[in-house]
Amino acid sequence: MKAASADLTTRIAMGSLVVGVAVLALKAYAAWATGSIALFSDALESVVNVVTAVVALVAVRLAARPADASLPYGYYKAEYFSAVVIGIFIAVAALVIVYEAYRGFIMPRGFDADPVGLSVSILASVINGVWAYWLIRVGRQQRSPSLEADGRHLATDVVSTGAVLLGVLLAVATGYTQLDAILAAFVAVTILWSGWQLIRQSVIGLMDVAVDPKTLNTIREIISANADGAIEAHDIRTRQAGKMMFVDFHLVVPGEMSVADAHAICDRIEAKLREKVDHAQVTIHVEPEEKAKHSGIVVL
Image (cartoon, rainbow, N blue to C red; front, side):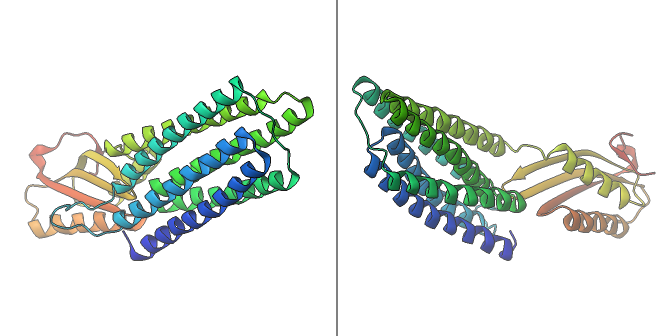
């Protein structure tokens, strides 16, 4: 991982922690001022946000460590593990919210539509929305599963907060106080879905998922354009580990070609792949022409 990229990812993760604590304080005040179960559940979700921000910070710092003797392929998958942990915390919070919603529905209690409390909740949601957009954008640019997962969860939080605020106002207008508990249950279902998506995506990443078709096509085009002198390239395989991308394939060269010339072709392909595909790690297995399969990328 490049130093500048690692520093940026770490700064963003630290920023998430600061934003998470600030939003938690605002939502906790809103829940206290109104006595609303729905706003309490919204504040509880922010507790999860703070926890996940801490987990993401630890993960990106660990993923930035260089490869060593014990982990020769690097620490990049640490971010996938963090996303799984985030999903589990989300699920736990959802279960707590469901319990509170059930109690509120069975034994409904009134709440105060305190204008200051509601305004504070709106402010917290705006902060979350801006930060979620930034996290998703940077997470995609840096190919950081932890940052993008954190951003997507915050985006879900913004949607659920908006629904909760609308519902609280409807409960006040209609006098149907059980609507407050129903809204809390809605928040629980929303964040359960978010947690499931995070865990699912992280498990796929841990299983060495291949790159997307567009990136694979780019890799094939680069190999084809820079393999002059070779016969073909076949058995192209790719996998992703955090922001790192691993590419390996077999390169068939004429039997009479010298090792030095074959090595020069490999160097040319590797250099161009690293130039055009961020964080690419390339492994090429050179084979003589009798190993040609006449498939894959035919150069000659």
